[in-house]
Length: 173
Image (cartoon, rainbow, N blue to C red):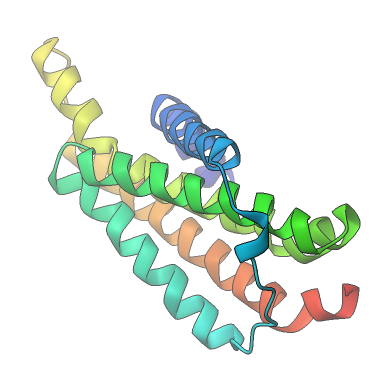
């Protein structure tokens, strides 16, 4: 557990960057004009497995940013934030605020933490490049350790979020 907290501390810049971009996307999503009459509410039939697979696909996109100095991660975080913002805004047109909170918060907090963690990993190559240009020593073994730990934490969080969304959220609605 201490290793996880150490890794989070060491990747503080990447985590802040990922959080900021996700939040910016969320704000953009909330500000997008939505035609209220075009919103149709449908219950989801997705299983926890379906949800986990879908989230892993997003996870892969976020991780590929490590190959593009964070560009793909930036775009993926921004889009994920926009989707969340528009989804919550749309949901408020057909559900009560309490229903929106109960349906989203039970798994959403865990899922967002997972997205931010893997987003930080996606920005890692950008930070390494900047540090290298500044003449800082790069310890490849330490960088790989951080990448692996935060990636695994993210996968575990996504699994927990999928289980909550697939099995527990329905108990609150």
